[in-house]
Length: 334
Image (cartoon, rainbow, N blue to C red):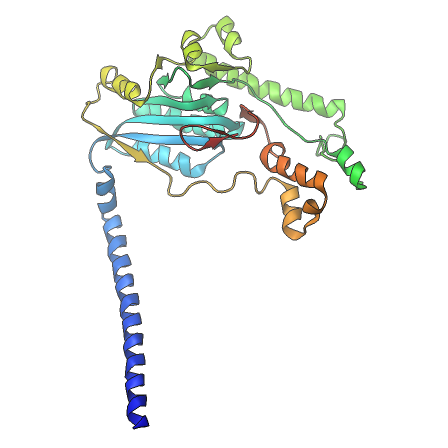
């Protein structure tokens, strides 16, 4: 009797195993079919990219040298089905080198396809730098545009280190090596070097805006003060070309560049969003991953938060800062 029960149990186990492997095989087959369809362009067909269309490329948040975004811009430039491009801009700016890289990619795109920027909540600093690479800029009356300028930020944590009893010793090959340092107040010669860097980068940014917006020297000097403008103010100062949203940008593509009004707008996106913005830039975060030191000292805990959000931004920046985090139409800005 017990033998029959054992046989029944064995058969049930075998059926469960067979069912499991059948499911695995089915999932594998399904994955293979999907991969084959994507390779054959089926996914592109579903997205609307297989027929003539207007590509929408969104640029949101902090600007970095995002190669995935640049790749999308380059693909849109080469794709014969793309008849025009709308850059959907919503950024406070970011790293100057990132703005430069994306500006160059958008300029190359605009030479091949009619390209227009539609500003959401914000196109400031490096965000505005990218916007001027297009042929036309549209913004809402209450959008924020401009902030033409460059800065270099560095922390001075020397008083905090004195407070917690930490002293950092260093041996350098020359006085300007790794200067300024967060461990001691910056010397004037180090500050002079940074001023020269900022002045050089700002001169390039100013000249770029002057050329792209057809400003005279006097006109560009009025807007290149680092200040922000509303969309309405920006229109008066030639920072933008029209007031409105994406429909106004699309209408411009039709009336000025002859694109059919029947063309669909299709989103072109990087395969994956950019990862953590500043995680590799903060030595405080690295320390914290190995110990609980920063949380143990309240002052260091505060500095850790500031470091992640504001201080440790390597290189020159072209970014408009606001306190805390402010919600806008898409994503968040700092």
